[in-house]
Length: 154
Image (cartoon, rainbow, N blue to C red; front, side, top):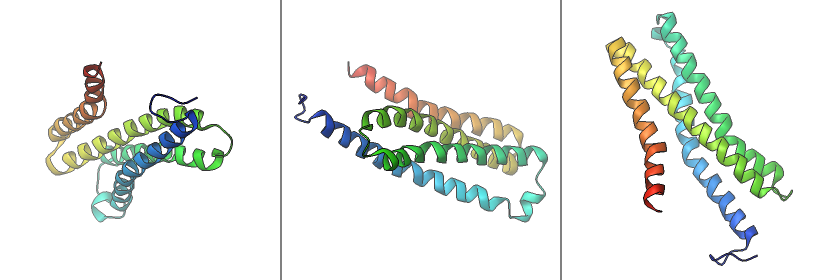
């Protein structure tokens, strides 16, 4: 069946998988940089002097980054393992959900990291303010604005 774009269903699915994998490359770079930063922090003298609360917030950021890494790399692994099974449409559907949750984890990890840095440098009030500002920026730019764009396109 040829759609109005001139692509067959298989061509469209192939293009959509390629686009998804390309988008993942962009997101994965941010995850890798954040993960590297978070891993190196624990080997500093200053980290050993951090409070239990600060260490807990750091570990939360690390775990959110791990979740993001898993969720953002899963569609590439699925594609590689299943590319000849005729499951492209299912890979796209489940992969899209995985990417959205992975982006949410990435936003939470970055927000947590910014909040932790603000706490260490300026104290708990800065932690709250910058944590909220960072979280709201991600929420608005990644999730609200696309809904507005989609709504205005109707």
